Amino acid sequence: MKYLTLSADYEEPRLRDDAVDDRSGLWEEISSALRADIVCWNGAYQAVIQMDAAQRVEAADLIGELDARGLRLAACVAAELSHAKVRYYSEGLLTPLL
Image 1 (tube, rainbow, N blue to C red):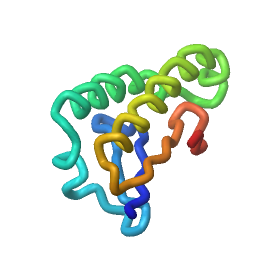
Image 2 (image 1 turned 45 degrees about the horizontal axis):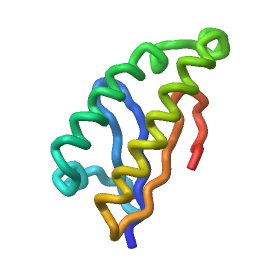
Image 3 (image 1 turned 90 degrees about the vertical axis):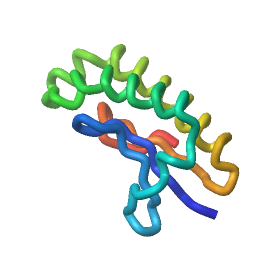
Image 4 (image 1 turned 90 degrees about the horizontal axis):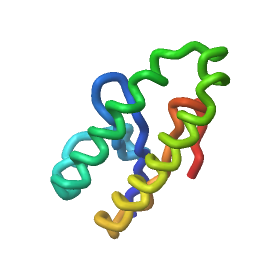
């Protein structure tokens, strides 16, 4: 069983194997449609990644919407990779949510 974490990151989303802190090969294991959805979500998250703590408080609704979307994407990754458990890390809140 693999344990993976999905999170938004600068420029590219991050899907990593928690045991070895490695991203290699994981993207090729998920469908191109799901990869495209994750890339789109990561693009929307870029505005939040640039924010300081005070701005993040003001953007709580946006962060909530993006995190809800990220949680759904993490569930989709888990569904496609039946050999993995996938958790979600909120870059907006700087904490794991799942």
